[in-house]
Length: 86
Image (tube, rainbow, N blue to C red):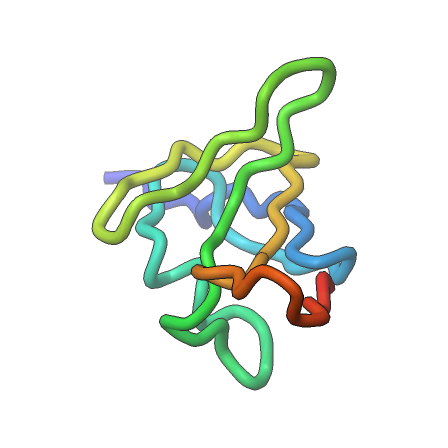
């Protein structure tokens, strides 16, 4: 049998680039790419050009393709409190 290496692509999380294998991955695998990993207190979103961004739910599988962009935001926002967006 012929074995090949998985194709690697670049995705971005909060403007940082990461080299990953193309294809399906879970939200948890995406969350551990940054150092420190993305905590449970932040939501992970897929940045969709010219459309509404998509929140990645816990346990969700995402089909990764080159150039995908993700960002994080606080899971809950307290009105009147300053919020840091990365």
